[in-house]
Image (spheres, rainbow, N blue to C red):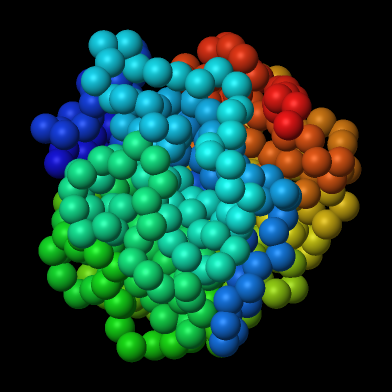
Length: 410
């Protein structure tokens, strides 16, 4: 599997060749870059037994978007070349199928949680069962095969899954007993099992039963334990950001000694986190201002951004970050090459800038170059790159500010 990593070592020096593999479709766009899932994961309190209070949940892949609505129905839109939308569409097309607007996947109303990788999707139902679909070239679906799935297939028979995260061709999950599991591509130690062997079914990571929050990127993962400590593994987990040839850590290693971490988001080479006091912290590469500390200086350990203690939600994109405050305001910073910040410009921002004046934002998630957010009235909004209709606004037009996404009447 080839990774265009060198393109990310230089400021705005993007690869002009798409990443290819013998099993992955090649995208017909002017520039394609390595994928990263950058989504702020919902925090589930791990307890004995599985239960979900369903609220709208959104996940972004490279250029597809999936959503579980408050009624438990599953919706998807955007790129579907590998079946990642889950509607059963065939993949042997000369012109890949794009869904320009959201459409419902099946008729089930028991979906509870969702995560999206580069070209695969994983989800949980309200009974704690695990389901997956889309590209499966490295076993990222976890069904014991490398066969793509065009509709959701159940993974195993267990009903105690509580949280999911999906990276580039791999998946990480938590069970209700606090155990950590991973499967799929493992060439850089991104599964955290101490090897570089791909796994076609869920494999347990260590013996701890204290994992609480998980987040993934292209090739590394971060997690928080129930004691509030922060852990990382895979490429860049050792924070040697310039050493793109190293594998980082093959098993979870603790980041610092603080024990008051509550939320994490993982960008391509930067990290964003919240502490229990509502303070915002960042570290990693900062060549495009993605850390938001007013500089372009890399940070090898977490540094606080400003003095505010009213941050409540975070998400990290390729080279940008977005966040919400307790007053419902939306903020963004970092690279803005494809208007992924949503401020109406293509100007990079080295400190958090407020997006609009609304105070009704309740959740936000982002991918490489597109962002989707939800307001308290239940409306969905999107902005940024839209080459494969991943915004869902019935177009392929780049949007520099949030536009509302319309759902068909049910």
